Length: 419
Image (cartoon, one colour):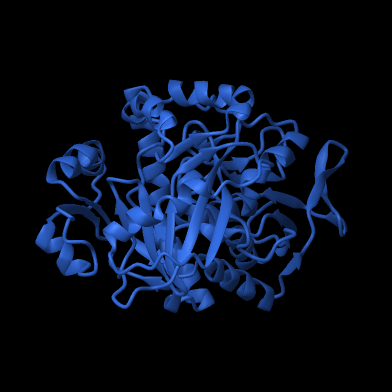
């Protein structure tokens, strides 16, 4: 596909990644159809903490994190849990995660994450301006706090060193400085780490819905049905078969988050994609609420101020896509959250569970599918899908248009070793 040639493109997935792909493709003159049975942003985009996290340059699997795994799995209140019946299926992913934790590999992966994160802010700004989303985005950074100075320094040492190596801004705050920023926090807080350039989205689902609304206003189409098969003619991808019928296309983009593995498999790709299940509770705003997302280093949860209340989110559960949710662990965080934010009510207004699409080396898959010149892949963004969705959309649009992407996409290939 050459630059300037409008084609019909089907994008599977209407979360932040798929919606961004659709709008940037449409801007290039393509006729675009989104395929997703849910409302825009109705999957993982609905339930995240809303942080545009420009400093998330460390892969999930580091030696320091892996050293904590045994104790976390034995602690029912830790940020990590595992459905043990899922272990046999998960084991190859875990082996790759361990192999990817070699210090020299962590540095390589950090550079690859940084290359994407360097483009995140500008890509969000384009969508905010194009789609009229400024009212949903708040500046002020992301604050991580601890109730002892020693814990703060020890727990953030590796992160601070990596941020310094990659030229990312951060500020170490004492107790008084933390309370100047967030006066509603407990007096027990002894200090914090501020990532000042991060922004927060006050309603992530409405943010994605706003992107899709602009896409539809400009002539895009959203088919509310599951994608079941890839259509193949003469060895070439010819479209998507959905429950609403066949959707012929000149190009197809798979951006279905944790559900992308099955569709990629239909194209002959074996991608070790797993779901890190996340949970949140929505609690009412206290009289004096938070001004920015706050992470508790002591207890491993985030309190994120949203339009409609405080979102309490925390932890990772490793389980199959089909396993029923278990809200007991996140509910047990409520008293701890109240210790951090004393005016916080324990009234749970809603509960949510979703799936973070994660690969063992923490890098997403972005690029053309091996051996398929008109099939494009955009999934596996782990904890930073909201952050990287718009930048990913730009990169996919470059590929479809035949432009040379401004980022070397080799680290994100679908046929890499993933460790």
